[in-house]
Length: 148
Length: 467
Picture 1 (tube, chains in turn cyan, brown):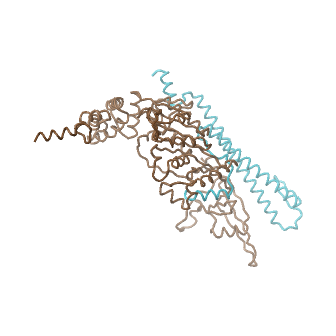
Picture 2 (cartoon, chains in turn red, blue; picture 1 turned 180 degrees about the vertical axis):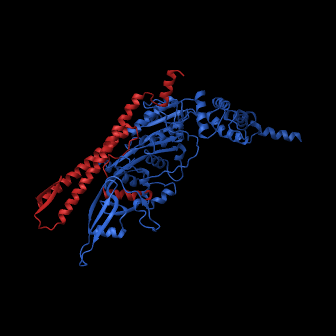
Picture 3 (tube, each protein chain N blue to C red; picture 1 turned 120 degrees about the horizontal axis):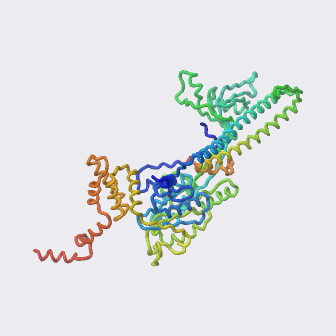
């Protein structure tokens, strides 16, 4: 069949016969997906660090209270720091970690949205809503009990 | 590969549909391409390019949420694909958007008034979406260590090591948590989830890696994979329900009984007001979203003037769904009045409607549709039989020739043939009459049918004279 007929057939079927375009499209999708996966891995790393900080904080709390100087290990260096300062540093870092993890999760949601858009998948609806509190949720639960 | 998302999409309401081949079951969507141009044959739809393109634009409007007060009228001769386009829109919207399909005469019921039936239909087409989130710790227990104080009184102290495939950490346990763990009989090797907000512990099962620990296990041991990713996860769940469901449950103390028994009867307007206020309040705070759906009323000429006036008003509300109506009437009387009007719809409502017309199909379009129906009904036809069916479809009506498909397949099966041939089609054509031949037949033999107006008395006198 003629080239023109072929083109008409292909556009009707919704298929792209231009390999360069397809290649570029796939590259784009792969890089967006890589962003999402990298964000995921980063969140896991941040979680590990936060947990380590938490364990350190617990360990300091469990010490007898008369110890004035605590040994802290930072990057293969042992430092003797007053216990009060130790606690302060660790708690500050812990809060910082929490913020960073929240930010990373927000970024992850955005990246996923971009990836879904690029893949022409239907958008997952409703995630921009504010969450209901527990009381409100219970109200709604009572309304919906027979369905859940 | 693990889905790259910390969120999960879950559907609260499961709709079970019994699959059967109905008249429009071959339609999977509107068959449009990215620029909303209709493809000639796609997703079960054939032809009607203009009407499908218009429907596609309406679909975009629905998806973007630009609704409230929009209404669409699909008008056309019988058998031109009006209901098919509505089905196409329903399929294209997906399960996310509420779609209620009804016929005009369903409004009339002994149990509730017309306005109540319409209000319920409207509210079935509007959904409310809410989201809730929970933070929880999910992992496999590596070990639990609980120390009881030597003196016998005093708090127990404990440590629990939890791990996932990617990380592992130690948690210090407080008194209450130790009690909860002991009550749940959590052991090393169990996979548990702890809700951070409530402190509730749920056992998800036992890890696969510990399956060989014991030779004999209790009857309810479930084995699950070790959880992946981070220990402390945030889960967000989105629920979509229709306003009608909330109404019904709220207005009856035995709400679930009402829903299973079918018709719910009248719902007090105070109850509705309450729901509207609550939903509006949440909407203001950004906690809920109104999901406008589609209400499709077929045979809309069956509604009467009171219903039409109600529709006028209902479309003004800011929570109104998109209304799609279809009719095949020309200029007829509006029910409930003596006035004539196009499509049997009053002019003030017609003014609010966007109108799409459907045209009768061409020969090749009819052939395509018949091919699709043959596939859908699992019938093999020869090319000659298909051409004959197409001719029949063009001369008589599309529906008639679609019905001949299954009938001729039964005859061909009796013949033990693999595909339908012209003889099968001819046989069925002779046995089952279409509308035109039936009317001809009637006109010819009218006098022999019961209760016809002419010559009932003539017959009586004739028989008397014979004897």
